[in-house]
Length: 244
Image 1 (tube, rainbow, N blue to C red):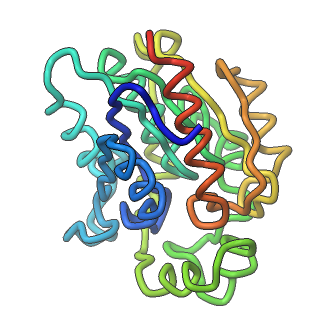
Image 2 (cartoon, one colour):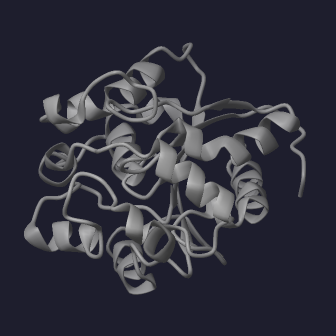
């Protein structure tokens, strides 16, 4: 599948330390077939001017996405895609803006219905992640991008920024909102992920079962290592949930 007979608005949310820039391949592919794409920079990420050290709550961190969803015209729904820690942003949006979301897609992402409520949740969502506020450059290739083109690994080294760990790990706690079971969800398992193992992803899927589960032969960042397959899966999701 390389096209859609209808128009969709995809909102692509990055993970920790990354920015909207990390979706550049997927954005190019989607826009080349006439789809609308938004890639917001969450607070202190990408070109967002705020310093991560000044952010203490998840609400502050997620504000750019909240503002984008709140500004959508009445009746418009988006396909909301989150990668890695961006899954927390998707879950929060599902709770707060269920009427704005056609389907939530988790790509090798944290998928916890109420966020990090317990220490077990935090371990599930952060095992193997660096404990510092940014990914150490010496582990980029080994942990994050082992299957990605060297050029993308180099680009990431130039653009990654510190992320507000406190706001993510200790602030992402969501009371169950009305959208929890109203918005369909899809999980895309990243099969060679060294940040979230297959086992960790399977536990999250079992605890909060999505409508569909797909697999992709990629490292932690399929937007770099297998963009064509990820592009195809997003089109498949759009087609499957067109009528929702």
